[in-house]
Image 1: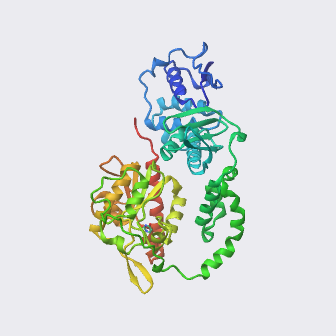
Image 2 (image 1 turned 90 degrees about the vertical axis):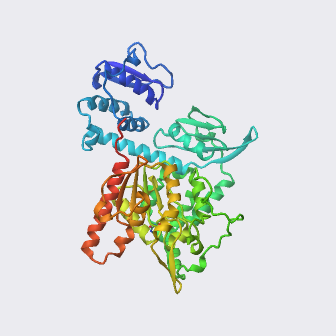
Image 3 (image 1 turned 60 degrees about the horizontal axis):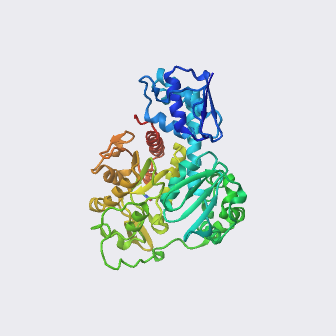
Length: 484
Ligand code: URA
């Protein structure tokens, strides 16, 4: 039996070095025992491999395996390192093993990967900082968080990018992350008692949550899935959930009885003081926040005149999948968010049927202002034309540059034109992987509004099934192995 002692629970680099050595020495998985040395850096004691540089005897693994293994290593399962070594061992005889989703080892690893990805996502969404006494003249914040898996070290850089000018610590039972605006460091895990009690920010979170809560769209099961109860303890806004859920029925009735939204609700925005057409002479923005601000002030085409606001995309800046629609509709124009109206409902249902978590994709539109014509008090959608699509492509290109998705799915002809740079027949090309110049791949599919409009039931069912199939395909492509 060969015993490997890793330096910590998340010592993936240690695992890689040891696994490579064991593999080169033909140590079978059943003969390898993976242990963690409680933080002591003694990777290779006497009974473990002595030659980490020995290599694998020419055996190379794909980038996909390394990506998968890096995530699985963060899972709390004590079996994770054994499982990874077993997979590594089997990959030599079966190089395409990872494509066999029914294989028990592969299936377990994929499940563990998605649980870890979910834990990363939840950490990004649910860490809540509380202000503490300033340190060295810097505003300082502390958060207590209990991640479902050991994702603190992997997720901390996200917070340093987002809050680069703010000193903070994220305390967890596993490890604590500290950012002093210059360097990120880690210390051993902490106790909940080390975390500060509430502050004024709590009230902010509660107000924000209450104002974004739409009782008419309340689906309790989906809400608990999105915001699992294990995180409620540290979320100031969670204390509102029971009462808001209870009152949702009455509030929905009141909303239905109220008049429908009208153009009069438009927010009239002051033009930029310098009158400049933002985005015309400026360089491309380098953050999604800058895109959102820029889109709202954009004068690259006349569509801004009749719209309430520019609607930029939303989603993680590191999303592997970008989903592009046509343009905001009436409700998106008022809400300032893509796909929240009737097409958004079709879209959400299809995503859920395809197993694509919306919050892991970057969702945007080819055109960022609502093109419409007034009919009485109603604002009727008008399809954007080529010059408008072309003008707005600058913003989509900026979003593509920042997010760098592996796959872009274009829904409908406008999105396809913008993503591919030319008119593209959806019926002919849908569901295929199309290579783009920037290394990403594109998939074109139907627009959800097209499904809503199809009068024939059979045609609608067929297009709906194709739409779901295309979303599923794009998602699997976005998560597929990339060869090293
Ligand atoms: N249709 C779109 O193409 N995008 C939206 O955001 C809403 C409806």
